[in-house]
Image (cartoon, rainbow, N blue to C red; front, side, top):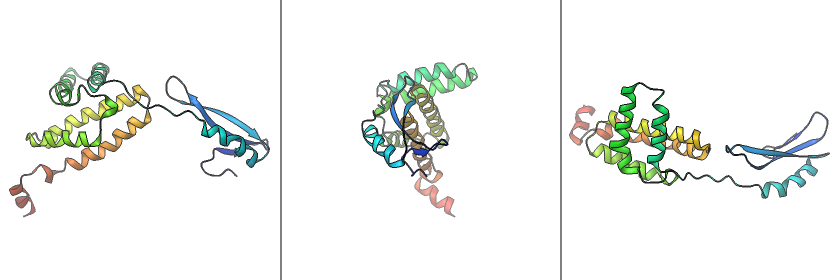
Length: 184
């Protein structure tokens, strides 16, 4: 029986097969090759040097946040009502582009997004409005993950969604004297 994580298994014809990544195609999908042998140990020995020399997937996006938002808005324009599109573009132009527009998409960090959320909440924007801005940002991030075909970027922004949710609780948006009123 194959051991976990080795990607070696016994075939119906009695041989053992080991698979390894040999590269990536133009869309970013992994390409695999197989090694065959008469025993698990034989395949494992053949596979070990091939796994070490496997090419690493380069995960970088050379586009700026503004360029990605422009692409996302042009793609979304065909799928939403005109009023929704104008709402999205207003939030991008007024709130997101001035802060993140010139930065590369892959250089964004959780701390930068925390600061963005804090700044918007300190401007006394409602929690709902800030949430709407974040929803637009997350939609662009999901679109970028599909376009770029890099799972790492998608995972990074799915993880950031927890940051957004934790920062936008009601207690955070209330003033100090309002906390006492709510507690009573």
